[in-house]
Amino acid sequence: MALLALIFLFSSLEGQLDSLFYSAKYGEVIRLTDSLLGEEIGRSDRIIALKYGAFARAVAGDSSGALSLFRDLLLLSPGYRLDPAVTPPYILDIFGRAREQLEGERELTELERLKRQLLTMKEGERKRRKAFCRSIFLPGLGQRYLGRKRRGFLYSFLAVSGMVGMAYLSWKTEKAHREYLREYDPDRIEEKYRNYRDLYRLRNASLAFCLALWVYNLIDVLMIKL
Image 1 (cartoon, rainbow, N blue to C red):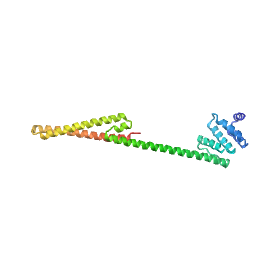
Image 2: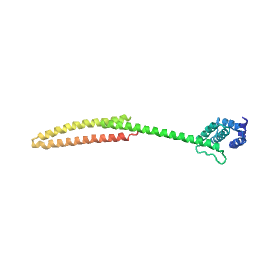
Image 3: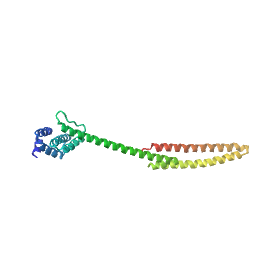
């Protein structure tokens, strides 16, 4: 506690720890930095406490403790560097191992993230292929499979309505065609032909509508964001 009181009496935390460290009072540095790290202190003071705590542990032979504190320091300040001109080689070695460990862990984390992204993409493509096949069978089934239920029901309603309309118009067209071919009254041949021609055009328009709906429905399935 006396040492903590001294810290508050002086403006420079780094100067206090530096003085204790180079006076070979490593135990006091460790106790003081442990106490400081257990408190709510600012980022810059925490970096200083982590640095000198790691230094003192390294000199005292606790390399694993020094490694742990250096890791915490690098997590707090990834770009932190030690001056090799004034830092003993064995401390630089521990600091380097801490950096290598964190970089390795970051690479593994990034690799796992990429793997998860790849799996998500593969699953999405598998679902999209299934949805595409369903929409080939009937528009709207793929959209419903992908969770777009309202849109799917609309496509299905339009597709069924279009097919029913096309079937009805096909039947009417064939009937009109037969009536036209069987007509011998010159006064009614033109009328029968116009009726057949109009129904033929309507049937073709209905067929075009159904084909366009099928194609648009398939494009829509491919454009849905998963």
